[in-house]
Length: 456
Image (tube, rainbow, N blue to C red; front, side, top):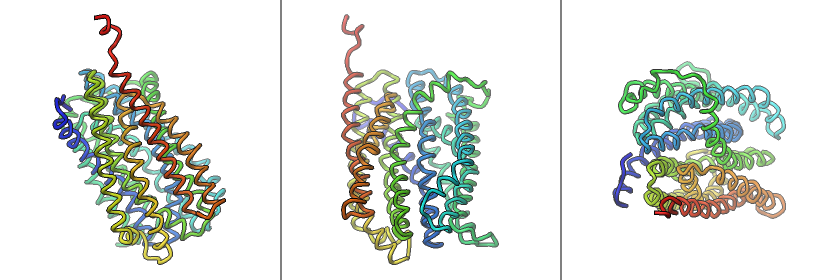
């Protein structure tokens, strides 16, 4: 990144960083998107099984993966403060931490997966598909977490186009393997939704190895000589990353797990309702990649300016990001209204599931506005290294307010399964309001003159 001196320059630099991140996030999510879509065309049971499996894995992955995102503000502030010599040590410790977290996930899954699935009211075949899908995904957990660390390093330098190209290279691999393993083409076994899990795991290994090669050989990454020395494990470095990362992880976990909880609560409905809910939620999550990408861009931009002690520039970037997110959210909402039936048709040809999906998609429109405010603010706060507030807001907004509202509407009023979606929308709206108040307070704190300056 470079210092900017006008809103026009900031907008130009912001978009240069944002667009590759957006393409990367959309492509990464496309793996899950194609898993869901292609499984849905295998059968409704495969779609439901992948839906249940994804609903269990998604909050675990995003929450724990969120811990590793702490490397972005750490590196961006070091670069902004021109302390580049400290970067390799931070990256290597991040890799060690990623392996440790991934290993813990695999170990816990060994003992907890069967009890979780057995506690749900699922058809036997749906339960088996969900179980085997998660086992297949487990083979890709370690490389996925390591890749996150490597990507945080690349993105923190403002080189977001590189991670974009890496993911774009991997998408055809994922789709091709899905085709072979889900439908049993070219002599491969027909695994249905389970095949999507194996395809994604293999793809994760590919993007990790490509990232290693790029960082070692391509400038400006090679200038840092990240892999020239494998430092000894440092618990103090882990503590620094965990101090920032754990609240980020919990905030993301509370936000994503509320969607997973709703999916699990819906296991009491029929297979068609579960499939339609997952299809609509999958597409809403696809649109969520827009504010999420803006959030990641804000972490880099705000972190860079905070590291350089330019509070005015950090504040301008914050509101620039929120404005762009709101504009893009309105565009996405209009598109979803105009192409409601076509979007539903991506996921299924079953008439019952198709009609239910169209209804769920109407509710998904309202996600966009709240996400366009709350998600970018979280990214800006991470740039300030203010992470505990987002964690508390997520807990209160989604679990203490949103989920009870949804449960009440679904079980005690006439809204049925749609009541849960209204609860989700309410939680997102509460979160947006609370986070805006926190951001304004942090910005005032950073803009206030220091005591030394006041004495002068």
